[in-house]
Length: 166
Image 1 (cartoon, rainbow, N blue to C red):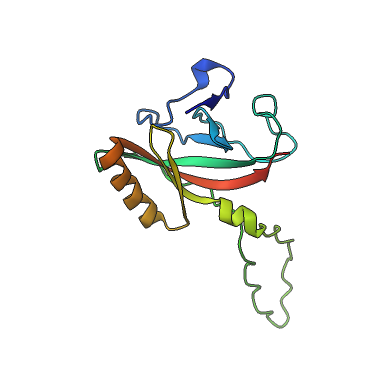
Image 2: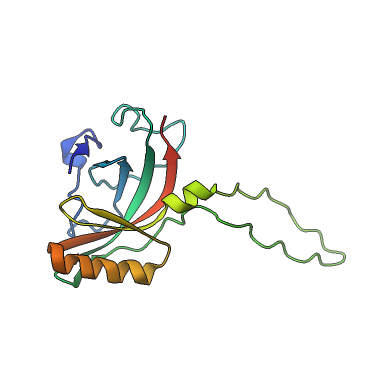
C-alpha cells in the first residue's frame, strides 16, 4: 500500500499494525492511499494540517482511530474508542417542567447521509485490503479476527469523520 508522507517527520510515524504504542492512534485515508499511523487527532476543517501532504482532488478523506489488532485470530491489543462518529439523528429534547427554565444550547449539525455511509468500522490487512463494515463493533471485531486468519494480521479502525476533498 502506498502512503501519504504524514506525519512529515518519519520519527512520528507508527506502523499501522503496531501493538506496542499505548496511545490512541489515528490515520487518514484519501482514495486508495493512506497516511501512516500517528497519535495526534486530526479533524476535518480549514486548519487541516495535512493539506500539504494529500493533494486536493476528487476523493473522500476518511479519518479513523485504531481500535484493535488481531494476529492469527487472537486479539493482540485493543484501544478504547474515544471518537464518536457523525451524528445521525437529533438528541431528544426533554419535556418542559412548569416553573423551571432550562438552558438551551444549539444542537450540532447532523451529518449528511454520505458522511454516515462513509464512516463506521473498517478492517485492514497488511496487503492494503480494506473492508468498511458499518457501526456494529461486535461484527467489526469478529471480522478482524477472521481476516487475521487468512492474512496473518488485521487491524480494526473506526472511521469517525469524512470530508469531501476537492
